[in-house]
Each structure stands twice: as C-alpha cells, then as structure tokens.
Image (cartoon, rainbow, N blue to C red; front, side, top):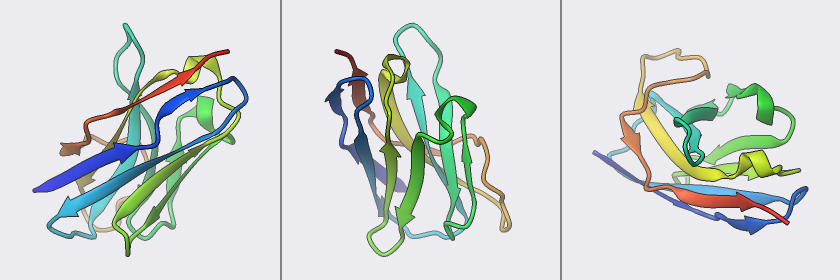
Length: 125
C-alpha cells in the first residue's frame, strides 16, 4: 500500500511558475511508474507527465512539453513537477500517481494503482 500527498498548488498569473511536490510513504518499490495527471472543470482526467524510477526516462503531454519538467528524489521519496510559463488552460486539479510496472518499463502514459488527493492549480490574471 502506498500513500501519496501533493503540495505546492495555488493561484498564479499567466507566464508564472509553480512547483508541485508529491511525497510518498508506504512500502518501497523500484519497479514503479511515477507521474502527474490533471483534471480541469468539466473535463476528463488527463495524463501530464511520467518518469521512470531511475529518472533516466521522462515523457510529457505535447501541450506541456518544454514548459513542465518532472523529476524525483528517491532518497526523499518525493516527486516534483516544475511548471513554467503557465497558461490559463493549465488550470486544473493536479494529481500525482504511481503504478507497479514490469522491469524495463519505458516512460509514457500509464494506468495508476495509487493516486494522491490532488492539489488545485489556477492560472489567472
């Protein structure tokens, strides 16, 4: 069993930056996919970014490529999402998530086994 807790959301003006954090607790595992999803009002939840346990592989939704950066600190059991040049269309509740995967999994969209509670990001002037 894993518990995930997000933090770092808030209100920011267009063009601004935020860094989301996701702290994990529970049984340690290395064969996991880690990533972020988001859900805007009236829309379905969508994949945003993922990273391999080693940190060597990352994958992004096209609309955030070049603006968002996913990273992780295995010693702190924490994952991050640095969001720069934020746009109003980035407004959503952001969720961190993990999935138990087979060894050798390459970063990409995935189907989470565990979710965090979500943190609100609002981009508005």
